[in-house]
Image 1 (cartoon, rainbow, N blue to C red):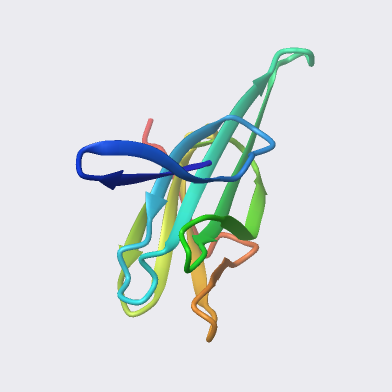
Image 2: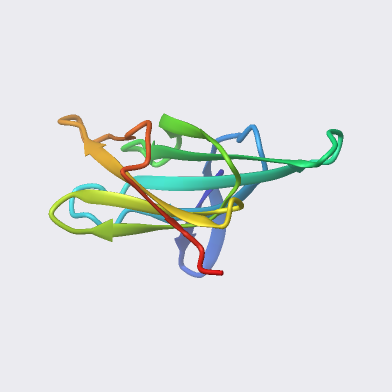
Length: 130
């Protein structure tokens, strides 16, 4: 992961966090008080196995107060994540479009310390239409 700081039209790296798989998408949380929380969806195709297997990961992290460090708070391992988007309803949700041709919605739990964690299981799954 890479957190970039824009200042006076200059771009510089503020913080990084290595991912175990290729990062496909990063999205900052739009919820008030959680703008420093971000989701990262990863996807990797393993061609060493036959048939090829798709691995993935959806993780949450936060940028520390100094803006110098990304800290992962939780992750769900599974099928490849192609895209993700935050949903603001009565609950804070994170949707993920996956390589399994479905959309999964995860509940996000807000911590009193300003962090957030993902529920381990999707609270809803919607298969793609044929």
